[in-house]
Amino acid sequence: MYNPQEKNIDLIREYFPSYNTARFQDQPEPNVAVQDHFLRVTSQHTQELTTQSDIKVHNLRYGGTDDRRLVDVFYKNGTAEQPSPLFVYVHGGYWQMLDKSHSCSIVRPLVRRGYRVAVMDYNNCPQVTLAQLLQQFTDFLLWIFNYAEETKATEISFAGHSAGAHLLAQLLHVPSLISEERRQKVGVLFFISGVYDLRELWQLDPVNPNNIFGLNAESAKELSPILWPWPADSPFWPGAHLHVIAAEHESVTFIEQSRVFAKNLQDAGFKVTFKIFDKYDHFDIIEETVLDNSPITSYLLGALKAEA
Image (tube, rainbow, N blue to C red):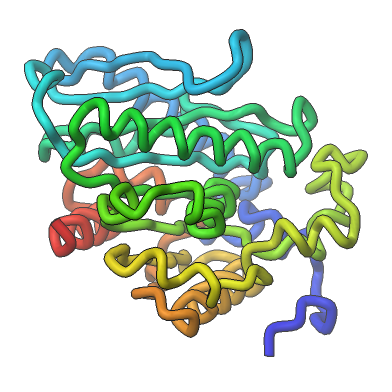
C-alpha cells in the first residue's frame, strides 16, 4: 500500500522533477538546464502563435480585476461563430511559478484540427493560499462551462500538467456544482505528470518556502486528491474518460502517486487509462505537444478522437 511516510529517500529529489531528467547530462547542472530549456522553448511556442495568420486569440478574464485570473482562447481564423469542441489546458509550476505564456505548446495541433483551446492562468502562491487557489479554480470551472454554452461548444475536454493536474482533480471533486447536462459535455480529462499527495511536500521548505501554500498537516490531507472520497462522486461522470499519465523519467514518488490516483478513480467507477510514457521526463512531455507526430501528441489526439 502506498505510504509516503515509510519511504527512506531523498525527498528533495523526489519532489523536484528536474533532478530526474535523463537529458542535459553533459551540462554541469542538468536539473537547471532542463528547466531553462523548458522556459525557453515553451515561451517560443507561445510567441510563434502570434505569427500564425490562421490562428486567432481572445484574451478574456474569468474573475478579479487586476490579477492573473485570465484565459486566452485560441481558434481557427474564420470560425469564431462556429460550434466546435473546446479543450482547456491548466499549467503547472508548483502553484507558485509559470503562467500562460509558457502554456501554449499544445495549441496549434489542436486548433488546426478544429478545436477551440482555452489556456487559463491563475494567481500563484503566496498571493493566495492553496485553498484559496482551489476555490478560484472552482470559480473558473463555472466560468468555462458558461463560456462553453455561450459558444455552443460541442464537447469540452481538459488537460492539467503537474500542479495543474492537481487543480484539475477539483473538477471531479465538486460535481454537484455542475449540472448533469453540462457534465454530459465532458469528453476526456488528461492528468499529466501530476502531484496528488501534499502530505510530504508541504513540509519541504525548498518546495513550500515559508509555507507559502498556507498548509498544515490537516489541510494538506484535505487538499490531497489521492485521499478524496471518490466513490460518492463517480456516478456523476458516466461519460468522461480519464487518462492519468506519467513520464518514465519522473521520480518514484511522482509515478507512484499517479498510479495510485488512477487506481482510486478506477475503483470508484470512473473510466480510467493509466500510462507511463517511455523516454519522456516531466518537461519534454509538454514541450513535445507542439509536434503533430510526437508520441504524446499522437496519444492525446487519438484519445480525443476516440471519444468524439
